[in-house]
Length: 294
Image (cartoon, rainbow, N blue to C red; front, side, top):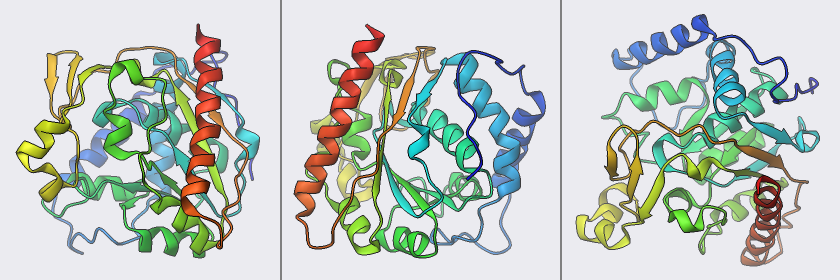
């Protein structure tokens, strides 16, 4: 495993014009028809060259804009593992950009790192899925995760999904996974450890004032998009940003990220007990990070 480079304020890179240009070009390519057709289950379309080209832009954003402080990177190894993270702020939550920049810099652009993306983002009618595939996204299906892990890769998953991403602002320093245990079963089946990743501060990028559980039910989101929340947020430039897909400009609050030691997931153990242990350790780290900020 290559040595990691600390993500701190020292030696902050200059604005990476070329890197942002590569990202814009990739967005343009995603709008063009793919002669191979779009397969949301394909795992051979990850483009390490694009990852290398995008990394300077993400590192600039992480280190200059949100002043990322990362720790615990010694717990990231080359062995297969299920990386479990908390989610913040919805579609424009900066935690994802910071996490990917940290993982790519630590593990390397060529490392077989994949992230489970929400089913809605990976639908055939959206060009977004083609772009996300190029940087390692795959449909959030347990079979996809098991394929990657059994081939020696690493999988990043956000078990809380919309419950975690769209939690109320007053719960900004809480880990919310609900009753979900699917990620534990993946680790148990693949016989790989769970490596928790905690980010603190990203949930202040927009102020979610209403989670919108009843709105999601009224709109039938659970049936056609697998979402249980329709949040209402205060965010730039809209002031009021309704819905889970409304893009916004994230506020530049400092983000702290901590990778925790691996947690074993024995195949014969109770998945709910392992989930509770993961959440408890992540919450303890979140409490420590939020206390350090104050």
